[in-house]
Length: 420
Image (tube, rainbow, N blue to C red):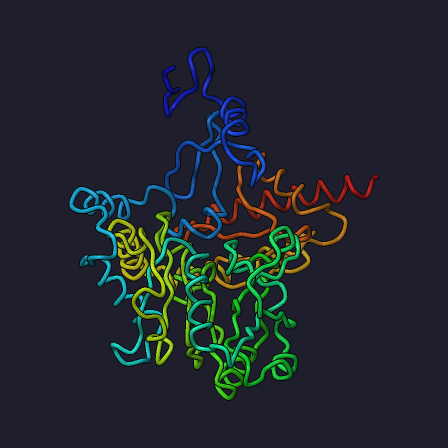
């Protein structure tokens, strides 16, 4: 039996959304539900589905495609690297791996001396957080069995990263999880001080909790977290998987929210490769030397193709001034969105925004479907919140077009809900 082509369906079937969705349901594990659309092409901030419909992508693969789709810098870097050397395993290294590690250490810990920070390259944010958890365990040993995480946290779905994730629906089907993790109220410095003790190995936090509805930790909390952990001899681990690599208008969100804070460990992924899977765990000071040979590893992590993509992302963001662009557009757009009737609150920084919806417009998931039908891709991390995490190259015109469409949709929904 011959396999169907990559661009169409089996003989006699049209390669449309319906056909691909049926095949998806038959072939792919049901971990995400059957997708509503089948995307086949992307360029810049736009994507097209199998029926030819066009969308402005304001989610960017959940904060991944920071330079949009098919960006020439990434295409060129990956093509050139893959045509030269694609994979070697970590029995060896490559110039791309070493150069990326140097760049990331400098971007993440700009005020620390060269050579005092080290990088572990992985394939995803979950893997980066898994490595961070192992660093915490190596630091704590038997004398420090406790790890603190925040309520509302999301750090991934592997067993270790899941142990740090707060949402019961994610955790409970897979318990018992690795032990020793305790959840404390997010942003409550007094609760942190009360929970902290000499038996705590680390505090793990996100500066802005994306899956909790794009909720920024309150002013002063990161400084309090650094002071509290340092005094107790615990590590401060900052998860920048969603917020890092320019997403908030700074290389790392903690640079923007608490410029004086230097964490012991930082994790990044998502936007790092601009769509190519890669993650990284960065540690500085004594934490940089806690993992030794044989204590952690990965086959694909740090492969030259992914590293070349990440270097192209960093270079493009730097050369094109995209950090400044993200900050400026985020501030302008936030102000406009806050004035839309039906939007109760705009949270977040830069181009990671959470729109808290007012009562009377229905659930956020329903609004997401209205927006998709109107040609805009967003998602709903909570029933009352829309999340926007578009490419950094989003134009003012496209941002304004979304604002106008959202205004019309929420007005229609408010009128409909009020009439019921």
